[in-house]
Image (tube, rainbow, N blue to C red; front, top):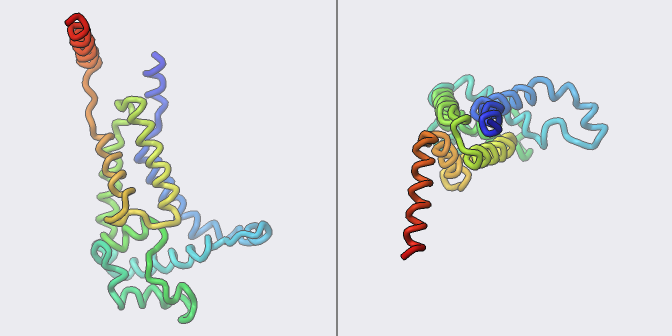
Length: 205
């Protein structure tokens, strides 16, 4: 009964990730600037070290070109005309006016790469793979929840889905764990019983 209660209380990991990621971006681009006096009073930067203007410009650039299909995975920052349009919002000699390393947000970077169609596909895959949270064992749920929480926090202010990074591999592993169909309890009991019998036979020999 305890295990069933625990499973019933589990949150949908895919929904949580999407709501938190999108909600953070919306908050940063709309509400956060209103609290600038408070952030300055405590010695903090309301632009998150210049990220908010960069995100706003990225949204503007992608809203006017390649909105649905993107520029190709890893190709936006190799396209000189695209990068030049990103730089138009900043002074030529400023850091942001010459920066060509990324959007510093996983969803915006993904939008640059694969467009809204790709972002939507990513969300659907995440929702579908994480829809079986209640079927997961405690260990599987703990692993999936821990990684997605870390991946969420990291992705808020950094790009973290490059092909050469281990977190991309672990994201696929996490989605694979979510897709793993659990055997019925009866089959698991029979399997454990068979293992026990095999161990006993080995001991008697």
